[in-house]
Image (tube, rainbow, N blue to C red; front, side, top):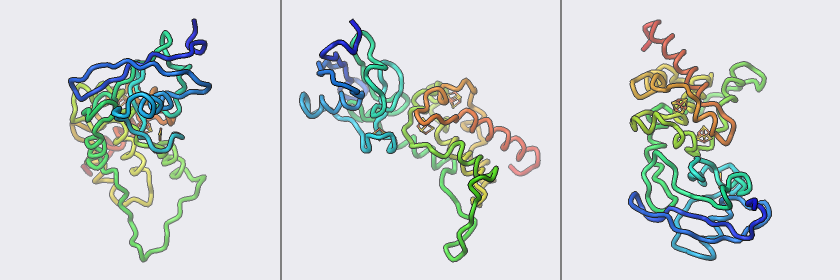
Length: 242
Ligand code: SF4
Ligand code: SF4
Ligand code: FES
């Protein structure tokens, strides 16, 4: 029997911290049901002690990501019909991040790495200067557009086996952000940013197998951004700028 024909869904959810266990819940099926709908039903109707995160429910805030049947996904825009296996779901917290409880991870190190990669815009102008305009159809603006729509969901980070192998690796999201700013003609710290990402745990640690790009729910390509950083960092090194 296909998952869509069942009236209930068997859902195994990780409960506890690092040393937790899976707990089974039976959830009624409904039309266009998302994985986040399932988790919300459990927390509101079956077990109010279940911890999970979400905010927008429309793919904007980046807070609802979990491991769904072994794959990192945003859950508010993942339909159960597309991911249920044998009429069931197994939900765990994202990989590569410390578990706080149940489906909630500590995102601290993920965002610390954004800061370490120079992920903060450093304006070349002061608040007293006129706003610097970038034409929407200019090559500079298009280069920024290619990577700017990141919602900080950490799906790419959880899918990256280099992050698993070496936890100091800055990871795809932070490097994607750095590349966005390197391409931003209004930014005044491109050299410092390249220096921040050119070290051992930076862009050169990426193996370019594109697990991050395959999984990004926004359709971004961190692998391409990282390749751009590699080229820019190498050029800067050869010019003696790093
Ligand atoms: S391409 Fe690079 S950043 Fe992306 S998953 Fe592979 S190692 Fe990680
Ligand atoms: S690059 Fe994509 S997968 Fe990674 S944090 Fe941003 S939106 Fe999420
Ligand atoms: S709840 Fe905001 S992206 Fe899913």
